[in-house]
Every structure is written in structure tokens, then in C-alpha cells.
Length: 107
Image (cartoon, rainbow, N blue to C red):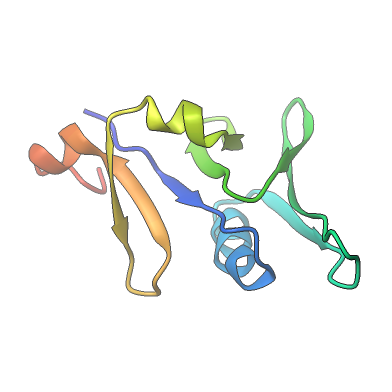
């Protein structure tokens, strides 16, 4: 049973920091773009993937696959069997529900 290695982005600059650090630690590339002075702030995280650059929007999950890191819309992520938990730094992370039940978290 596999785990889902994922983090959800809340859309904030502070929330982008642990995600970008996680991506960089996994040999990926990620950049935060934000316009805090704009009346309707536009924020995103850009992820470099083998196919090009993809955009992570506030509320999206970032999932780690064998090929790299990819964004996942909340509705798609909700269709997966997983349990949310909070890591030691307060970040929302997810692992497959069957992996938790079977004691295989982190494998």
C-alpha cells in the first residue's frame, strides 16, 4: 500500500515557505509569486515539472509522484482515500488511509 505524499497550500506567503522547502529538499523547483499590494491579490506557486511549468493555486494540494511534484485540485484530491494530519510544524499533510490502518506510513 502506497502513501500519498502531499501538502495543501493555504494561499499565503507564509504557507508557501514549507511547501517550497519540501519541494526543494526533494530535488524539485518551486517559486512563489504574490502581489500583496493589489486589491485582488494574485498568488501562486510555480512548479517545474518534466512537461514544463505548472501553477499551484490557493487551496490546491501539491503531491509528490515518482516523476516529481504536481498540483492537485481539492476536488480531485478529495476523491482519494486519505487522512489529513498536521506535522510538527503545523503544516497540513496527508497520507493514504489504508497506509495508516496498515501501519505503513513513511514507507
